[in-house]
Image (cartoon, rainbow, N blue to C red):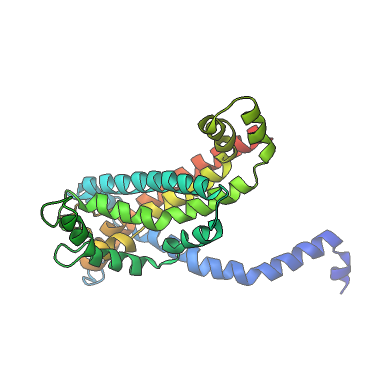
Length: 302
């Protein structure tokens, strides 16, 4: 009791806050910290789900195995293409739709509601639906294109290596751009109308007002959602897996699918953990870059 009285008011508040947060901290430690530590640990050890004789310290052997994989280079390129063009397409489509929905027209509320539907569709459902729609034998996309005489014969969009990556990127843009739209639209609502009106009085046209007034006000939200989606897209597994499973002939295999191939097909957890650790390191570097960019942007705005 005497010890309790010796505590200052701020110390009692701090102790209460720690006690209240403790269950959440334990939960996060078990859900995130332990699995992450286990992955990093296994990256330097021989761990195999079937061959239990493969044990012991591996050093850098798992990393060397991954880097020597004949499909590693292609997977890195696929991951870069998948991430860059997905995020770029989502950003551009999201920006255009946000600008259009920011205008005053009849039925605007209905369009604002409907445009968010693709984002609400679960990834598995969206992937399977587009897989059926793109089927060269009974898919509605090929049926429409052939009947409109745009193509002479059905195209196997997901089964041909020439079209597979572009197709999954297109579908990913379709599903993800509403998130950008809502984010940009929300930010546009907070921009004072006086800025645009003053620019219009000074003779600035529509495009000049957008690039000189609106776009600079969206720098902060752009940085946040682009960074978030770079991470989400780079580590995305289920969307490509549902549509192509990394095929045809590894044409759409990204690094997350390669991790799955090592762990669940080859049962080599050590190599899968090594590749996961490499991806985690890249994400950490990206986060540091984002944090410094965010800090400098905040200083400029201040």
